[in-house]
Image 1 (tube, rainbow, N blue to C red):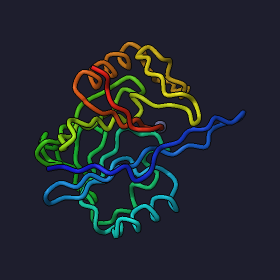
Image 2: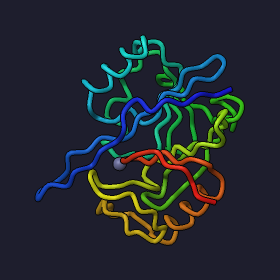
Image 3: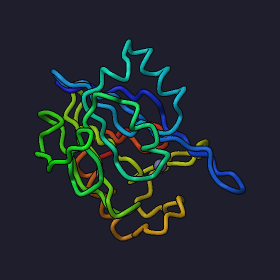
Length: 195
Ligand SMILES: [Zn+2]
């Protein structure tokens, strides 16, 4: 059965002229693969988190990237042996080889789902675990550090992303909340979906 560990809880503090932010990073362990989701942009925290798990960057088989923002993807290249599943045309990248991916490339019970809105090309993962279905949501759902995590599917996206589409974003939120028992947001704490 798949196991998910949140290695780094994503944070996002707004400054008067920018952000201090890095994404939530998860480790998914399947029977035979180790997958990192959204490695973020804080190298020291990422390396320390891997070390705590007794892992090096070479132990990772796949890296999943939800979308193209640097606070989610900047460190992707440090996993030398990994293949990459990304937002980009649904291709899996293996160094300079790019091939279309099979829906089950990450393993049984791990579904890659399209969740546009925050940006058009945005993917999330839905993972079967012993505790139920867990959505690794990326920035479909996220909070600013320190704010109370009140779920409002119509909440404006605060990223100032030029390509944000509110209608798509609300639809993607509904989709994930309908499918998942737990949500791991792109920035903020994991929470249980009240059904
Ligand atoms: Zn983000």
